[in-house]
Image 1 (cartoon, protein in one colour):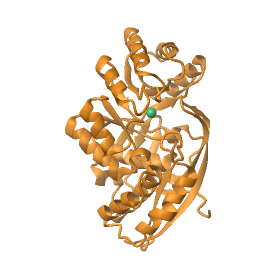
Image 2 (tube, rainbow, N blue to C red):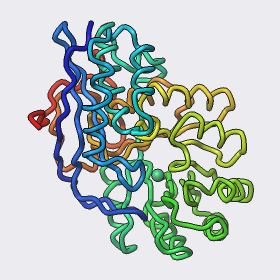
Image 3 (cartoon, protein in one colour):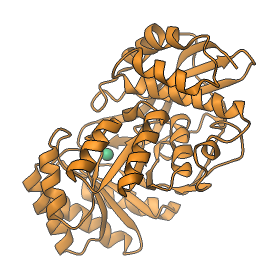
Image 4 (tube, rainbow, N blue to C red):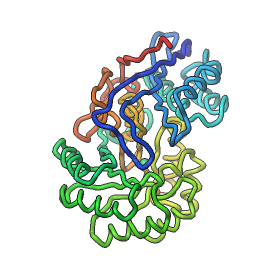
Length: 362
Ligand code: MG
């Protein structure tokens, strides 16, 4: 099965409501889509969002990396030579992890189709359902409480609360939500680098003192401040999850070696795809560091690739794969089924998504 075409297109999907974090506000998913065609006629799909404030990748840079560097490097290669393809993908250009992730997942889609298996079975096949949280955007407290209650009514049992804009006022925010949803709902808190280390210790300690039962606190301090994150991790009881601090397997190794965080958040757009994410899983498993799998503002295509990885690996104990739930419509056909926080894998070969209404004309 030889790679004969690599096409780049775009997909546009409106969000149900604006997505707001300490870093940005977004109203639509506007992503690059990759379609790889094999000489046998099968196609594999991948997707990459332009998350400039986190990855540095823009629509233009993703397109350019694929069209000018990755496509010429991979055309003509045999899909069965997965190791060879991944070596070229990761050496033909440095960084550009979103572009690499989109191509990586399209290659894995075809690779699994080649062997007639759903991707998660080839990668390890640990489970066939994955429970995801849903993100509650940063807003005035009454709206965050209403959004939380609405998510619980829809069936979500885990909420990820975006904070990091208002220091200690974030404690009242979380307390209000905890009081509204009750004790049976798991709450995760994501500061998106919004605190200093000392602020984080004060805020997290205050949440502990109030008995708010926080599942984890994600990326309390700026990505480069590993010393600060290590201090927080060593001081508070609440588990600390490294997100923006961990892109590559090398980053994960550093976090694990220095005990800078308790947990690692894997995102395909940071690692450059499944191939590299598997290395983080292997490292984390060796050292007993549990992982979460997350996504950027991605639609069902890229999130389903991540869901396959999550379903495959025991060390991925938490999932933050709410991209499709935040979209106003699902423009795809096929793929895993998303229902009220539970993602059900199917037996379709590959990633399983068949209909991709992207514009490949560009
Ligand atoms: Mg995060």
